[in-house]
Image (cartoon, rainbow, N blue to C red; front, top):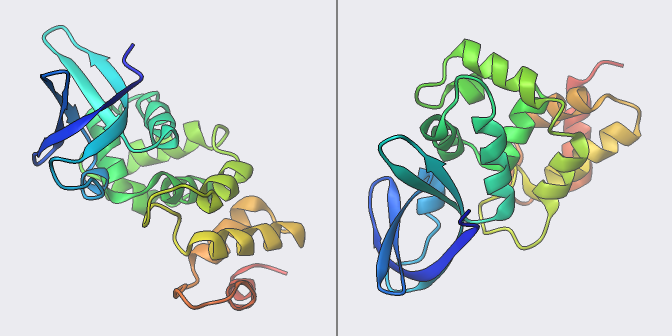
Length: 203
């Protein structure tokens, strides 16, 4: 199993990156979002990889973090979602945004991905809800070391607001749905987000 690839970024293509390691160029398929976060060719990159074995091909899929890779593994474990479908989902949603979508039953956000219909999105939510805990959402959205732009909507402020609602006794799904409806700007404080979110929860 190829756990990761580290080498010089030789080229960027529409759906993959070419990484040179020891004189060999590896084509690594990546989501559009991840490709956009890579440096210019000539720089050294490290990609966590998943090797997909087919009858007629060996395909490498690459990710910027181990967390991204783990979410990809969960996605392809859902019946009806293959590697390309999983990359399509991750092109439109970061792993943390996907967690929020699953926990808040946001079928629309997931089905916006290419090749993912409403029924498949509903199945994905059903199968992954037990595997994506509220603790995971909070931990990964607020964790340090993530690349810029790779956090959940509203970043740490949103996750703190969700955590506060849960502490007040609201259910995790209800809290996520409420915070998700708040339009969070970069300069908003947790108290402001919490106050706005309380308008969307039942007493």
